[in-house]
Image (cartoon, rainbow, N blue to C red; front, side, top):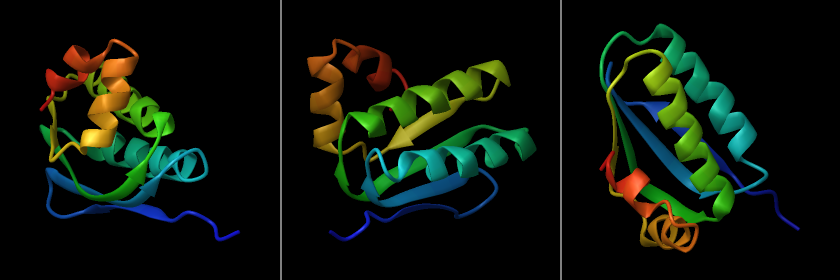
Length: 103
């Protein structure tokens, strides 16, 4: 079986892009990288999710952790191009309004 791949890249000081498959195997590395970005940021952050090709509930956990970290540092966070799959999972868990607040 082929290993899932995903990455998060910094596009500018405030803009990041997540791409690839965001699942249980890729989320730990993505979160580690995102934590580094939060530690060095002093401005609002925009996360572009338009290049996410596949996701599961682990992706939702990643988004919620990003929200938690942003709040702890008083950083305003915005998700752009949230995939329908992630929104459907959020709706199933009853937290879609929490996620939509950041779109």
